[in-house]
Image (cartoon, rainbow, N blue to C red; front, side):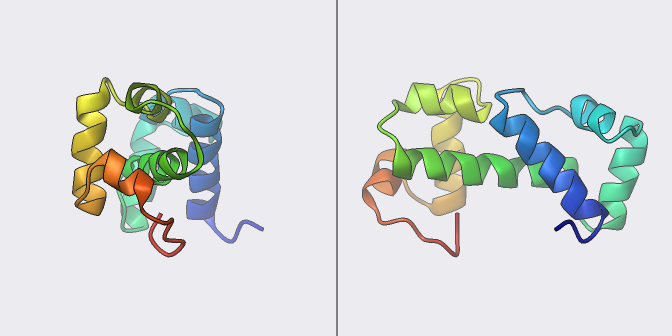
Length: 113
């Protein structure tokens, strides 16, 4: 059940990401029938930003792929919206202070996707 506008936004963002569509501010704004500026204002009103929300979706998706698939780092980077494996490695290190290979070997942490 969606409780508020932010839940609706997050559902639209996650849905676009899972549909292998590259989620952009413009595509999500269109899905929500808003202008990009209105979407940015609404996110700001909820104490968040486009970049932060996109980073959260990418972190969750990447971490899940590392724990549940044998895909290469290059394939995971492509599926998670990163330009290359190097960008993905930097992001994983920022999120988890570990390499993708080390994260893959560690047990999943349900409280920190």
